Length: 412
Figure 1 (cartoon, one colour):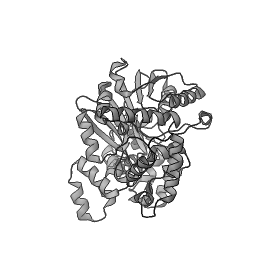
Figure 2 (spheres, helix red, strand yellow):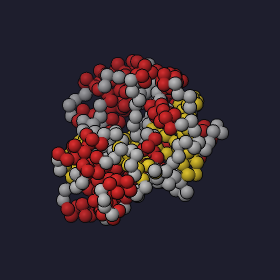
Figure 3 (cartoon, helix red, strand yellow):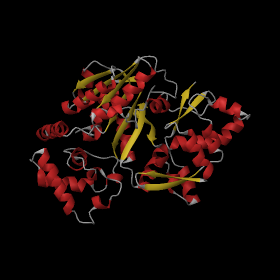
C-alpha cells in the first residue's frame, strides 16, 4: 500500500511539472484580473466575517495548492488595493506551477505574496500558522487521505478564521471515472505526452452511448488544452463527493459548513414546481435540503463552499441589517435594474441547465440604489420607509441575489 501511494504521489507531481494547471500566461495580467469563488475578498468577508473584517488590519491568507496562481493573485491584488496589511502565502508541490504564479505576481508588481514549494501535509511543521483565511481548491480530492490533509489545514487556521474549499462533486462528473479507469489500463507507464495523445485517440473512439459523451456539463477534455484534458481524464488520483460526504469530511476535521456557492443551487425548491413537494422540502434540515438539491439537479460537478471551526470559528455570513452596505459582485446596478424592470422572471444557467426564478417585487428599484457606498439604512431613508416595511419589501430581493452569489454585504 505504501509503495503504491509513493508511486501515485510521484505521478501527481510529474503531472503538474509537465502540465501546470490551469494554463496561464503572465502577459495576460496586463489585460485582466481573473476573479472567482472562493477567495474574492468581498465574498469571503460576507460569508466568513459577517461583512465586518477590517482589511487595513493584519490579515494572513494561505493558498494551499496554489497551482498557477489564480486565487493567490486575485487575493493578493485585492489586499493590495485595500492597503498594506494583508499577506498571502502560496504553497504548491509543483515548481513549474510556482514559476507561472511568481511571474504573474511580478507582472502585477505584487509584493505581498510569499512563495513556498511543498506539501500542505507538512504545514503544521512549517511554523507559519495561524492563518486568518485558507483557500484550498482542487487539492483535497487528489490526496491519498483527504481527511488528513483537511486536518492539517484546520490545525493552521486561526480560531476565528475560515476557509474556502472546492472538491469534485460526484453526479456532475458522471462518466469521468470509467474513462479514467480505461485510460489507466491502456496508458500506464507512458510519458505524459504519450498519455495525452492516446487519450485523444480514445475519446475519438468512445461510443455515443458512453456516459462521458452523454454528460453535457463537462468540457475540460474539449478545450484543446492538454493540461485540462489530463487533469480530467488522466489524473493519477482523484475522488469525488456527494453533499453528505462533504459534511462528513468537515465534521471529521472539527469544521462546519457556512455556505455552499452559489447558495441557491443547494435549495431544492428551485427544482420543484409541485407545491406539496416544495412544502415537504421546506421542512428538512439544511444538510438534507442540500443533498436533495444535489440529487434533483444531477449536474453539480464541483462543490465550492466556506467553512469555519465548529467551536469559536469565523463569525459566519453577513445579515440584512440596517448598517450593512450592499455590494453587487459585478458592479452592474444599472444593467441589472433594467433587466429586472423589463421582466417578471429571470433565467440563469448553472453549467448548462436553465433555471427560471421569479423576480421579487421591487427588485429593479432596490438594485438601482446600490452603489457600494450607501448602507441599507441610507437606501431605506431615501425611500421614506420604515425599516420594517423596507425589510419586508426588499429582503426577498436580497435573498435571491445573495443566493445567486451576486450580492454581498459589508459593514459601513
